[in-house]
Image (tube, helix red, strand yellow):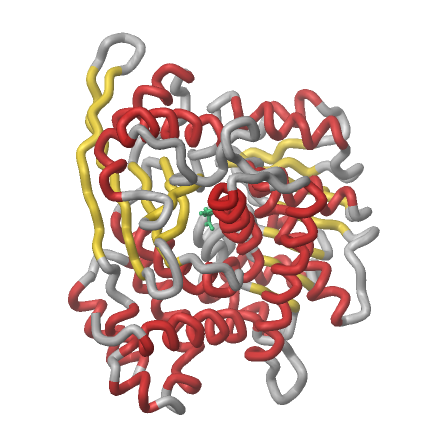
Length: 445
Ligand code: 2IT
């Protein structure tokens, strides 16, 4: 397998899908050497089969706003790979959503889900619907219209969607309600459900908590600890909230968060009240972080700025793909940052990753760092299948074990001769080996 040859073919076939091409290139470059030591992979054309989704559903979603005006959006579900389990992955509601973004997310999800050690294949979906400024009633009608189309293609053993950007507990509730009405079945067809109807404790916190547990493992390996370190986070949604909460609990000082409108710098760090206010800001549907500085006098709002111009020990991008560029990474390095844990999916550009790795700074990719979210979705599926629910302590303990195993797998496959851990390579090879083995054993399908 030659990465450049495969990329040239994909580039010609999908010239406009830049996020998808970026995600595939990163994985292929990481696995090329290992892959070529296994002629059985080449014989079975594993890579050629892996880069194409099994199928993509595209559908029209028509809904009526509070003024009686009719809107038409596009809905998608990418069922990418089911070698190790039912398709599993979130739904994103954001105006940028298109096939390239969902294919990149679905492709990443295959390896991430494999890393969790749980039986989940890779999928992703969503819509170009923009939740910004919408009322709860409008969100409900959109979710119902979306599920009216999607429901035939999903199921607890077929494809299990969850949340992503723009889809949280409220949306999962509306989606589940409609699924249940259509299918006449109360099953674990979605994860991130409410606690009174099949949800798992710790699922809302899991992505951010898992990310901080992963950071702790990276630090402990170097004899360090997150306590008393300064942490800059981007975003202020569910993932940023969970990361801020756990990092603060463990004694770190979270000095930055951000939104599309700019960055908040708070030298005093987060506390319970500020962390709770992040949820309020998100629930307002306004997608702005500026009000944080009006409410808390220790915080300053920098319009149009990113969190990456703020001096910190640890950077944790928690917002959007490609939110950290090469120039951002250089600025962080110049300011003394010595660890970057990518929490958003593909949050760093290839130039940013290269800058961190060249400087031999601790860097780990989203598919390892943020895997605690989908892992806890897997634990929700297990509880649903067993018709029981575990305590928060039990779920948190399992989440800890999973993050520890993922860290171990990254070190096992990513340790370089000079001792530097290439977590990107480690995560990609570990995830790939599991999926490739399953594909090989299941024949040409
Ligand atoms: O990117 C992700 O892993 C998610 N949005 C969570 C997916 C899930 O099925 O819980």
